[in-house]
Image (tube, rainbow, N blue to C red):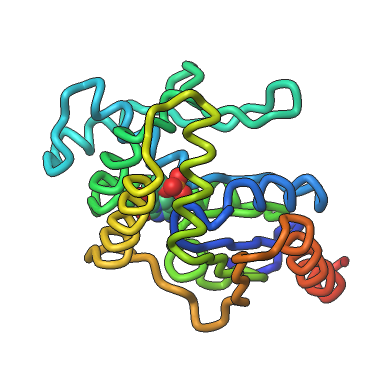
Length: 233
Ligand code: DC
């Protein structure tokens, strides 16, 4: 999508699980006054709905029907972004380890990716948005104005996810969590449709050992510079 007819930039943030994408994207969106679209949450919502409906992750016909009847939306509530599925707040229900594992399988299905691809393009059509995911800069918006590839070592990402889950009172071990992150990396990178891949023109940000503020400052200055070159910017 070209810049003409849009009111702001389209910023793509891709990277593996646990690289800090959600935290960074939310804070960067706040700093810039952009809309934040968490595409992982959209895949998670489909996985949750499939799990509740007892649909196996390889049952494409049922998944297609499920997606057709599922309305996913992001709603702001007390300054915090909630995810709803047909009006039900599923923000917490989509973050369990079981749903994370199922989402990895569900997100490999072309039938699901096609539906969410259309929805993501529609949600971002006016610009002034940051989308975070795995294939934003490569498939969803190959012409995005700014592309970042945010990564961190697998140990660091596993450790962060472990602390997150513990803080929510979930019983997990550090080794298991690191292993689960490594498994998801493999699944997300090795799948046939829209695998996790860095876009050739993405700016690499390795957050290992960097504070959130340092990462944000770096990314914000790159977006601000691009904004100045945007029509009307
Ligand atoms: O970012 P996350 O951990 O919430 O993503 C959940 C799963 O969805 C993960 O297995 C990768 C997948 N995903 C994807 O395939 N494409 C995206 N654009 C976003 C997430």
